[in-house]
Image (tube, rainbow, N blue to C red; front, side):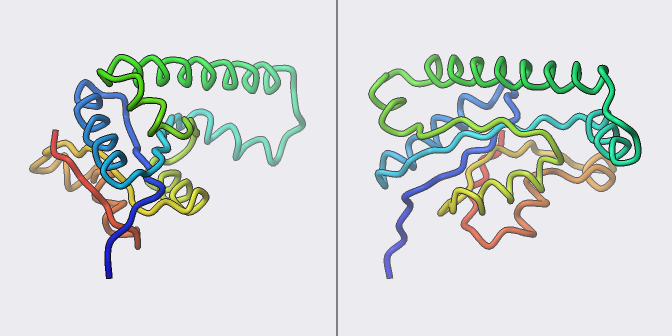
Length: 160
C-alpha cells in the first residue's frame, strides 16, 4: 500500500518561523502533486465570549460593528497570507501550483484545525511546533500536542 497525499492542510500561527515550515509544506505538496490549504486561526476570547452572550441578548448596532470589523480583519489577514506565500517561495510557479486556498477562521485553534481538516478532507496536516518545557507546557499545552492526540490523519510536525 502506498502513501498518497492530494490535499494538505498547513496550519500557521504566522510566527517568525512560519516561512520555514511553509516551505516544507510546499515541498511535501510538490513531491506528491498535492494542493495546499493554508489555515490561520484567530483566537479571540472576547469574540467567543460575545458570541455566547449573543444567544441571550438582542442584536445591537455594536454587534453589527463587531461583525463588520471581524470581516475586515479576516480580509486583511488573508491579504497578508497571500503576501506571506509570495514572499516565502522563491518560485511563483511553486506558489500557484501548490496553494489551493487560504482559510482564516476564528475560534479555538486545535478545534478549528481539526474541523478544517475534516471539511476539506485533508490527507495530512502540517504545522510547526515550538519546543516548550516545564510548567508552561503542562499548564497551557500546545496546539500541536492537542492535534496529535485527536487527529486520525498523518501529522507532520516541524520543530521551530
